[in-house]
Amino acid sequence: MRLPIKYADEVKQALGRGYPVVALESTIISHGMPYPQNLENARALEEAVRKEGAVPATIAILDGTIRIGLSAQELERLGTAKNVIKASRRDLPVLIAQGKNAATTVASTMICAALAGIPVFATGGIGGVHRGAQENFDISADLQELAKTDVAVICAGAKAILDLPLTLEYLETHGVPVLGYGTEEFPAFYTRTSGLKVDYPIYSAEEAASVLDAKWSANLKGGVVIANPIPEAYSIEKERIDGAIETALAEARTRGLTGKELTPFLLERISEITGGESLEANRHLAMNNARIAARIAAAYSELS
Image 1 (cartoon, helix red, strand yellow):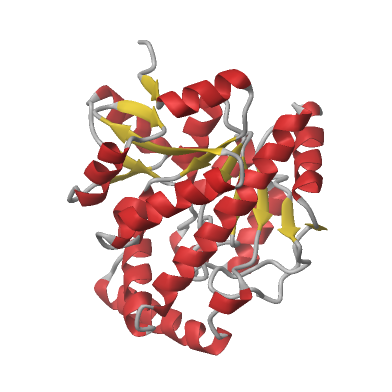
Image 2 (spheres, rainbow, N blue to C red):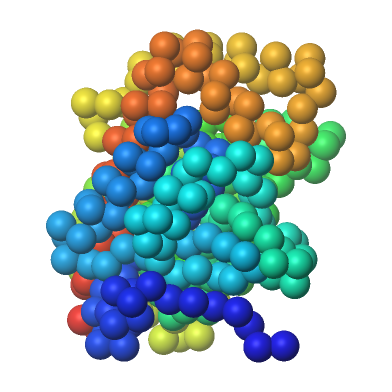
């Protein structure tokens, strides 16, 4: 079977000429924000990448084809569709074989980006080890993908609903470097600090690119987490967001939510509790990550 993969013209030309390209996920469109904010945010993320001199490639599965870059009409289609499948690694072969539509998670976006030869990916926050994983073994496929797929992920840390210490332990065990962009402390998505250290701080896009070049040149397989704190102006007070998270987690336990249902519920409920403040924070941290990712992609293209 020939792998069905289609590139947007802009992305195809950029890759052919060695220009910097930044991969963007599509789950944030279908599951991260309500319509029409999801489309507005998707377009703004792409524009943020362009303003920094790189080409955006929003990734999704449409009619069983891996799409590397979406047109305005395709973004609209994805953003307004109901019950869009949230595709991770295990889902990709079935969705492709059956000609389905799906939005890509961090894990599946990494896979598709690697297939397309795109080494830099911007997202909001990675998945990780869920709270209570000692009993339920709920660990995001994002972490396994980071252990084996050669893509750098620029994020505001892991989602704050997770067990951050165990998430960092998992990444350490699997040899995934966690770099802090301008910080020695691992950011906690909605807040700039977590009390946890990154492996190494870095202070420029060029320094980040040099680490990526050294890692992959040495055939050290796997990704890199580049943790970029949310801008100070949009950081939420730790006590406030922690309280909202605990309330949402308690409600999720009462409802018996697990697996793919859990994270979308928690993010939506936290947004309700914070009066939309968490959604606004999510939007701004993702934008900040897209800008930094574009700079890193540009610096890396100069080395490769």
